[in-house]
Amino acid sequence: MRSYLFIETRGAHESPDVLNLFELGGTLRESGHEVTIFLTQNAVLALGRSDPLADLIARGVGVWADDYSIAARGLDPDRRPPGVRLGGAADLVRLLMAPDAVPVWH
Image 1 (cartoon, rainbow, N blue to C red):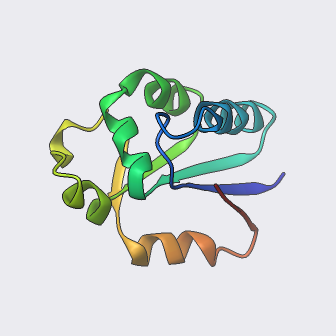
Image 2: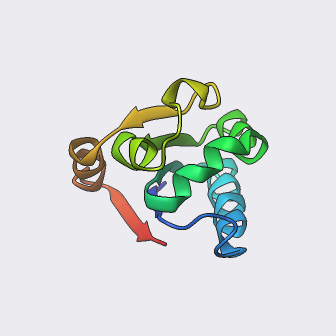
């Protein structure tokens, strides 16, 4: 079993690949792998579209959102979907440094 860390930087309005990455993360989780998705930069705009994120969380994927990116875009962190954790650079580094982490930057 592997542990995947997907770091998503783009919003779905910029690239349709974002939703494909979410689906890949869910599929990997259902295959028994640990999966975490860290939303940063424009990817935090997905917080306004709770369906894809709620689906990921229901499938067992850990979802984080960068608090700085949220603030920089004027979003309310309290309006994030249930289960989405807030974090910052220190959290991302901790996730990246996990011994079994396979990072995928998108």
